Image 1 (cartoon, rainbow, N blue to C red):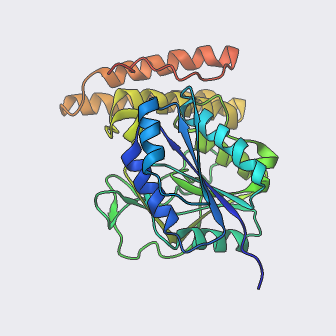
Image 2: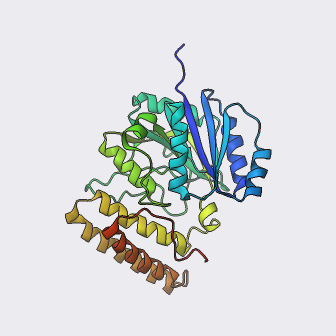
Image 3: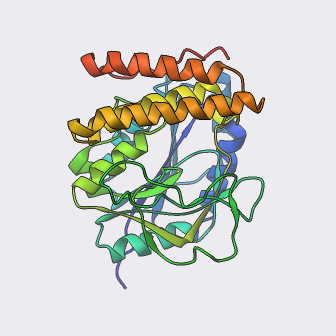
Length: 321
């Protein structure tokens, strides 16, 4: 009987012990047997970290390591990737810690990835953490114009899963809420770009993979339940803080992956849409003017970044909000 591919599962923790423990326990219930779980504590308070270590179940295939300083999401993932690389796994499964994974998902992800001969990033169904049958995300469709506007399949506040996406789909974009990366891909293109701190970094990684001939595959048989925004905004996904990071990341993504002739038009159209959306929400009293400030700050900092191409250190003008 052929040996199962070896999978390293990587999650980050940052002062979110309850979510991390629930996530870890769901992973350890997996039917897939040839895996290890690496938890990187990304600079949590020392008492939080010590409490997490005490509560983690004793398992030979579970390792937790703490870094003293919060490296941000990108820095934390890259630190984790560099550490699990020593084990030379066949695949690395990157997961958010505010998730619960089904016990057959690792098996299904690996089965699909093997079908593509380790030349694909594979993800699956992402459900809402609190509404168990509401689909939150499955991927984004290809932009056949050659751009980076990949339309999410799931729109708005989600959809009830009625089996409408129970077929495999090649996507134009996936999210790293959970995705299975072939180890060879990591060796070929490296980790996440430090031009990003959090948000949009997965788009850049996926686009770099596509340029190397890899595919982005959604399989309906792998399932996960996701909260979202727990660490960055206390689950308030409409915060100006997240708006800033998303806009700045999107502008950088366009600069890095679009032909120079298309960057200016994309930037103008993108910012115009963002401003119109904010004005519309303000008129409906669904928002304050902080989102307009987020657009201004993001565009200003993007123009500075274009000149210097500096590593993103995580600065956010709305950190105290």
